[in-house]
Length: 295
Image 1 (tube, one colour):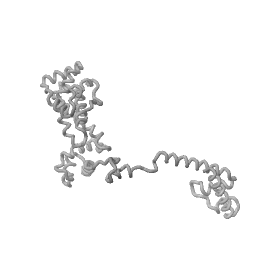
Image 2 (tube, one colour):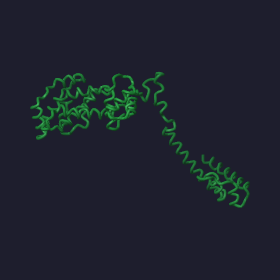
Image 3 (cartoon, helix red, strand yellow):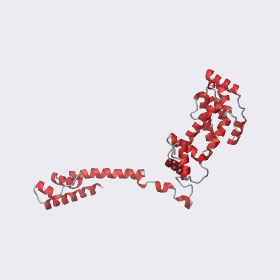
Image 4 (cartoon, helix red, strand yellow):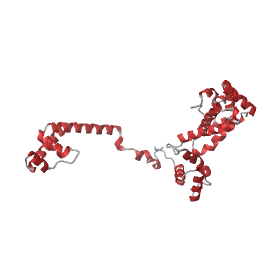
């Protein structure tokens, strides 16, 4: 099991419980060892806490952390239903425990076990929300509360009915539709983006139909290059026309607004509409020849 403290308080880094407990090889052995570590009496707890607070005694901090590892193990078991490794849950809980030890004030009249419970749960909650599936399912404080309480509040694995939805919503202070939405999101099944084998049932994994065939990098670059060449070629072809012919083509085909009609251009140039059509056709043919030469 990897020893990793993440964002644990720097002052307690040497009190890393993963290193203080001898290497045991597996999670079950670690849990057994953590449960065998001696508990502290009230007097011992206050003595060590004051040494840490007043003298920054890291050995005292280590004893406070080690004596409460069993608490982290116990709390972490409550979150095994989210599909995350138990060892990772314990590790994050240990980070919360060390934060609690650093901030614990023995003169507040509470035991460390009660104070640390909040920090351990908070750290595990944050870890679950960041890692449970690919998309976070809870954002607001009320939704987080709903996320972590909905499973335990359901009397069975079946879908909540109308009265049950209203009861849960009232108890947690959320809207009934939020309860229904969260239940739907929690019950959704995960699917691998890519198939794990060549079996027929896995051949059509989401990656097969989610991929955009038009977004392949070489194709995108080729289309951009073609568009650039066409744009440059169009300007080059227009430059080969006389001023009147170029103006007629632009106003008939390249304007962003309403295109000019043959009769409008005929009145402007003092010729017939048929003459404008002939000039346009001749100019377009010349431009096609120029563009073909550039292709």
